[in-house]
Length: 153
Image (tube, rainbow, N blue to C red):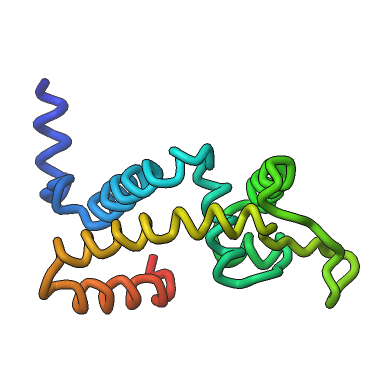
């Protein structure tokens, strides 16, 4: 007990609920869980959703491109793509720009699934925007600054 008091006396004041990295991580987890409820109804995992939404947005791209864009390890992207291919939602071809790479694209079935899911995802976004109200633009600006900043530590 005395040791706890001694340690606290030499450490700076710390409030977990005010610690920005913690709060941002908690917010990201909550948003991810809420969004997952939309696509899990269709049997998709989070990596599969991220691959599919990127393909819907970008068209035919390589696993490497998806890996960079969605911040997932190549093995996770590859596993998600393999499962999506087995389910008939994604097709793989040799990348026309670089034959060593595999290019992925949505099948007709994959595009149809995204046509069902995206309106639900956009409705979730509208709800978030409504919740943030007049703070939305400042929040977006702050997130952009954080995402584009160089590591400071």
